Image (tube, rainbow, N blue to C red; front, side):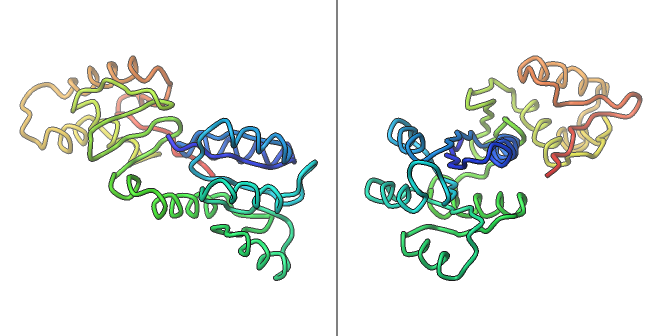
Amino acid sequence: MKQILIIEDEPDIQEILCAYLRNAGYCPTAASDGLEAMDFFRKNTFHLILLDLMLPKISGYHVCRLIREESSVPIIMLTALDSEEDQLKGFDYIIDDYITKPFSMPILLKKIAAILRRTDPKESDEHCLSYKNLSLNLDAYQATLSGTPLELTAREFDLLKELIENQGKVLTRAMLVGRIWNYDFLGDERIVDTHIKNLRKKIKENYIETVRGVGYRVEKIKY
């Protein structure tokens, strides 16, 4: 799971960023001032940093300079400073993007994903799917929950993948049998229920909803 450091002194924005990043499958850590940020940065490994500029104790520009002296980790500046001069100054500090407040969370998430694909070779080599704190590596057939591997059978993995790819949609037992067993299964469609039951035990999160008399779905993540 990708570790993201949020350096933001406004509690409301910090909380929103943490919630959205967590739901998107990332592991966020939040710092409220420049000194705390540098302490976190030097004690942990982060894959990307979201950096406000107007910070207590040490300015965002100073934090950026200190980080760049030690690391090439991707940095996105998130700030209310929207002048051309401020943006040019930011890029002079070798940042990866500059986003002004207020900003769109869906667009920010897309930018984060794009930067991580570009800067992490493993990210581009692996076909991954995320849902809240679940992450599925579709190439390796591996699933993790908050970074902890899940021991899933191939059918359980395929079921989970199908539900996550169709967030908000109700998938009937017949649909799931057809897509996962490829219509060559001649047994009872209730086998789906058994696999869902086992999945729920292993995930230990109430992600899979039963739609009585119809089938199953997972709630669509709302941004």
